[in-house]
Image (cartoon, rainbow, N blue to C red; front, side, top):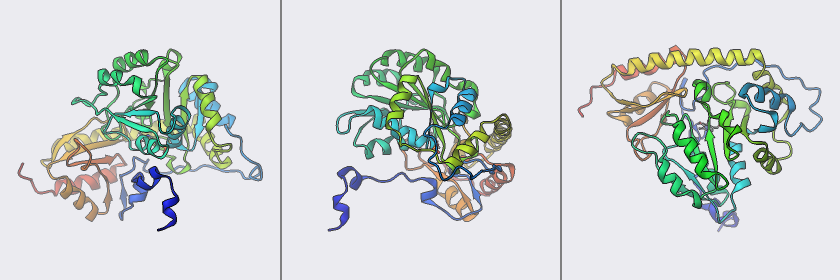
Length: 356
Ligand SMILES: *Cc1c(COP(=O)(O)O)cnc(C)c1O
């Protein structure tokens, strides 16, 4: 007997999210967490650190609203997009009663957050063409409060189809909230659905500074939605969620200079991604290359375990998805700079030609 028996039943049963940092690894090329390859310098000024920070720092909210093309009343800043996911569940789902809907394979934190909150999970797998199963989701709308879609989807890289989404938003009016997770949208900004917020009170878009903005270390994410939704979330969020130094850094990242640096980084990473994919197409150990709308490429190898082991031996840390349904032999490679992608390609060129 231990103190653990005092914990909630759902917590005792919980397998925590296997974050890249938790899994760890040994190596010099880190392409397992969809982070940006390099950090950029920021300045932090300490004269206000004796005071509690603002709950929703105006500079950050205004900066993100201007960047995203929405009104400041339609923006909430949180401790990463992960906190936004949990806040949505805590705000809209009754524990022990309500359910969320997810479309696996997709980002793992929707399910983990639901579990820790005692909220049920309806799984409606992606179709063979890796789209949300629109008719099946529509059929389940009466059973769920929140539908989580991810566009570009982590780990498959696909965008959510616009027509299917608008039809679902229409069907779900007054019934369920549709969340579109745009953690990677900077790599294909034209695909954002933020413009639909004006028409649909039940649309929520989540964003982050962790990927294209190269700031995974500061834990800063955003929720974009109509002011009514934002006001509900703001009732639930912690009183001081954004430490003052984080607000200062986020404001710099959202300045004209910061945005310019981000856009240059996206251009370069998209260039590296195209080059990497072209090389992959020539390699016999590669069976399938998935969509590439984010800063990562999911690849199915003829022998995924052999490739993962060879990368590990070479000090290259990737993310193994082979245990996920439908993703046998699949490994996700974050797109880094040329030297990193060349290191990956060198290992792949050395792979023996597997018999299929
Ligand atoms: C990385 C990621 C997040 C988490 O973003 P943070 O702001 O770092 O919490 C959310 N959703 C998806 C799909 C991600 O890949």
